[in-house]
Length: 200
Image 1: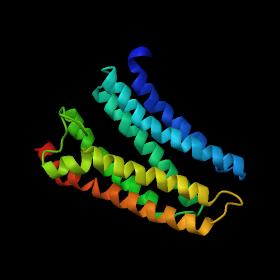
Image 2 (image 1 turned 120 degrees about the vertical axis):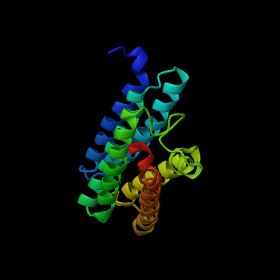
Image 3 (image 1 turned 135 degrees about the vertical axis):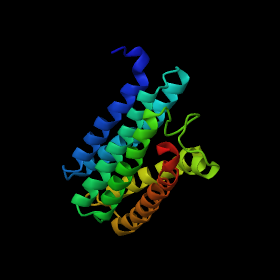
């Protein structure tokens, strides 16, 4: 593989392993492990913006890159929801919604991709102005990303051994988790609503 011309894709793939390391640290019940987990979580989600920046700046955008970016997003996000539910920090409904939404939208988008459409950008499968805003606008994507990463970080902090104000932090984390999962569903609605355009 040509590393120089695939830097963005390498970042997309690497962030999955960074997230896995962060999640693995949660099973080492020490303050240091949880602090390091928070740091790696921040890095993993920051890498999601870095891969896109590199792809645009160095003209490495491609359909394959778009697929890798979404694939990385799905694996990282689902992993956090699942582990938090397994640990009893969140209700099982969170990973169930996340995974169901991912299968639904990505299934539709795979058909769209085979017909030359992408999830975002100029060749987006979304045709309506509202659909493009909800799915592809920077505002919605950033809002969703911030709610999600802040929920994950605060929930980890709330369960850090001997942390002060754990209950308050956990409540804030839960509120952010609900905001994130609601946005997750909302951003799927235009994909499903406009799927008929792709199949036709």
